[in-house]
Each structure stands twice: as C-alpha cells, then as structure tokens.
View 1 (cartoon, rainbow, N blue to C red):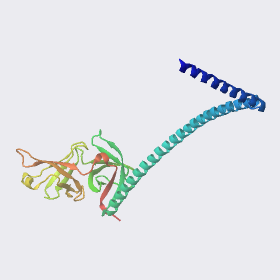
View 2: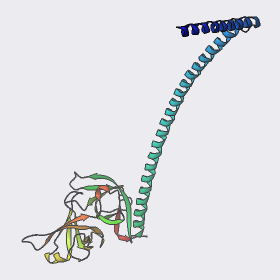
View 3: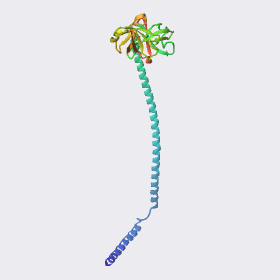
View 4: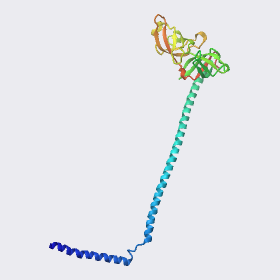
Length: 284
C-alpha cells in the first residue's frame, strides 16, 4: 500500500513536467511561425502528385497501345516473310527440277552423239493404253526423218534400254509400240550364255516380259539377274541393246523349253524421253 502511494506521487510530478515542456514547445513554435500551414504549397503538392499519377497512367496506356501496334506490325512482317519463304522454296524446287531435266537432256544428247547411226531424240507426248496396242506418242515424225519400224531406245538412270519400235508416222508425231505390248515380239539373247529366244509382252508396263524358246539344257547356266539383249536378227533392232534382266526361271513339264520372266530395264511409268534410231544412215 505504501509502495503504490509512492509510485503515484512520483508519476504526477513527471506528468506535469512533460505537460509544461509540450506547452512551452507549442508557444515557441507559434511565435516563430513553424506551425503556420501554407495551404498554397499543400495544394500544389497534392495537385502535382495527382498530375504525376495521371501522367504515369497515360504513359502506361500509351505504351500498351504502342506495344499492340508493334505486335501487329511484327505479325504482318512474319506473314510477309513466311510468304517470301514459300516463294523461295518453290523457286528452289523449280530450280532443282530444271537441273534434273537439264541432266537428263545432257545424258540423252550424250547418248545421241555417241551412237554410230543417225537418230532422233524425242519426248513422249501421249499414251493410249486403251487402244488396240499400248501406243506411245512421241514428238518427232516424218518431218524430222522418223520412219516406220525404226527401233526406239532410251537412257534411264544411266542405263540404255529398248523401248519398242515405230509403227505409225505422222508429219510431226509418231506412234511407238512398246515392248510390253501383246503384239511386240523381239528376237533376243541371254547375254552370258548367248541362248536365243523370243521376248513377248504381256500387255502392261507393270508386268514382266516373257522369254520363250530357251532350252531346258541351259537351266544350270542361267541365273536370276542375267541380262537379256536384242539379237540383231530379223532386221528389226540393232544387236545387243539391253532389254531387261531375268527375274524368274521355271521348267515346264512336257516341254523342252523354260518359262522365263524378264523385268524390263526401262521403267515405263517414268519414261519421258526416247531416241529413235535409223539403222540405215550413219551418224554425222
């Protein structure tokens, strides 16, 4: 109890002392003008702060619109570059095709120049698989010197092969009967054994050719992959023009001959250009 009175007695003087100090400070400040409020400066500060905020918001909105416009411009530039890239790729493909075509032409011209007989390079311009024969129309006729029964060859993937023979001649175009036609018969030999037979077509460019009249006695000497060439007999074709390679060999019961299938060396589905050969005139 005595301790509580002592604390109260000490607290009152301290409180009064603090109060007097505060009052003295206020009076002194009023006398010196330290507490006078400058409303003009306060208003300016408030207005400046508000203006700064509005300016910041406006800048932010402007930056957003600018960014959107830049993004739109970038998209347009991207689309334009994409179109240019497509055009470039198209040109590249065209250039590659032109280069390949030039290489094929150089090969054909090289073969044409190397032949010892006069010849006429031509393009295939039409096919008629529904006709009586599977005719191929070429871009050279009598005007260029092409004649009926002339042999037709081609160079494909670096290999020379027999295509067929001319059966009709127009002024500017000719018809060629390919070796796969039913009516086409070519006297042929197996290059390695020199066995003589007859190549006949089976009516489709996708089917093998048939090699007939090869004796069974040659069976042990024949192999899959052996090359079959023209014999040069009967006056229809030059000698040793490659026709194709043996793909199947079967003995036939009650027959002295073998049943042999030959895959043409020429892929007729990809054939575009040919060379018509004149067997009578020498190449200049």
